[in-house]
Every structure is written in C-alpha cells, then in structure tokens.
Image (cartoon, rainbow, N blue to C red; front, side, top):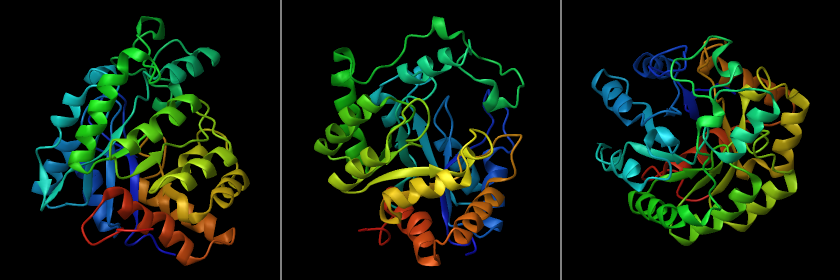
Length: 307
C-alpha cells in the first residue's frame, strides 16, 4: 500500500533545542508532496500550533499542532492548552493532541537514570550532538500524574481538552499513571486517547494491558512507532507481534521520526507499510491503522466518526 492519504500523528521537527531534520514548514510541504493527508507536529518544548499556522500561510495545510506538558510549559498547566486553542482550520482547532509529560515525567527521568544518562535530553535523540538547554536530571522536579498535588490541574486540563475536542496522548509516563489517567480523562469527556508508544521502557505496557485499555474505553488506541526499530532496538518481528496482539482496530501507526539521523518521515512511513505488508497485513488493515484510526484521533468532521 502507498502512503498517499495516510496520516502520521507523531513527527518531530524544528526549530527547537533538539536538532531536527526539517523545520515544520519544510516538513509540511514535503508531506503534502508525498500525498499524505496530514500529520501532527510534536515538540517536547513548546506548542507547535504556531508552526501549523505558518505552514498553512505558506500553502501546505497538512500539519496539525500539539503541546507537550513538560516543565517548559509549566507542567500540568491547563493554560498551556488554552493558549494553543485560538487558531482553527475551518471549524477545527489546529491543536489536536495534548501530550502528557515526556522528558520530565517521573518514569522517564527514572529510565534515564537506569541508563546512566545525566541530562533530560538523551544522546539517542540527538545523534550524540549536545543539545542546548539540556538540564541535569537531578535539577528537575519530576512530574507524577498520580500525585495528589496535580489532580485539580489534571482535571481542569482534561476539561479544557474535552471542550476543545482535543485528543490526549499519554507521553512517557508509567504504567500506573496510564491506568490512572485513562479512566479519569474519559470521565471528564476527552474524546480520544493515544497510548504513546506503550512498549517504550518508561511505560512498558504488556500486550494484555494494551488490550484491556483499548477494549474497555471507546476511542483508545495503542500507538506503534516505526522509530522503535532503528533507534530503540526492537525487531520487526516484535513490532508485528505487538500489533497483532492488540489488533489493527485499536492500533495507530506513527513514525515518531524527524531525527537528523533518520530518513524523512514519509520515507519511514512507506518503509513501515512495506514491512507490515510483507508480514501479512492487508491494505484494509493498513488503512485502518493509518487513516481511519488517525481520523478518529484528530476528530475531523465527517471522518473517523466511529471505529
């Protein structure tokens, strides 16, 4: 299957402190030329909605924005979400996803310590190039979504997201935090939830846990990222096994690409499609994972209304 008409809801770009392959305006033009229907721009540092506005002004309106709730934007800060909700494409806010903490999640910082990494920007994200703004992990106040002190802000954040029709992505939080926030977000009216690369070491959900979460709650999807093979050491066989275990109806295919060391995101997605096709996934399954489920997460009018 060709990637034309597909989405990628997890792509990194710049400018930001981590060196990236493309700025988001160039990325948007490239993705449009490749025939992709859309992508979500992600930064660990700040909202990408302004990049989506600029890309639209320069004639490449396939980019959607997001914000990640690390310490850079005040952590679990509902005003960081509000600040990104003012721009729209038609009737739809350009802000489509709010990521829970990544770099500054308690579980992520603990993972870095286990690896012997002393800064919040690990070398595998930058191809070994020192990143400006990297902080010693011992200087960072970890964000724990089960902590009593953040519950009021967390609920308010989910309320703002629900009102704006914004999807939740779980970030680099722990298994226990995921099992805390998924039912909480659903109870506050959040329409769609992405379990951010749940096989990542900071989260490490089992296949059974992914099936439980995606099966019990409506519009909850397990994200499976291409980048886990070339960067994190997962084999193609492992990725295929996880996707089969959860099932295409509840899997979202993304690349999580944009690193300087990697091929362009559209090339990564095509390689992913080719790999999965060779493993026996038919075009209908690929469309489900990279088109229908993505449209559900994005909440686009007339698209992805149900799964």
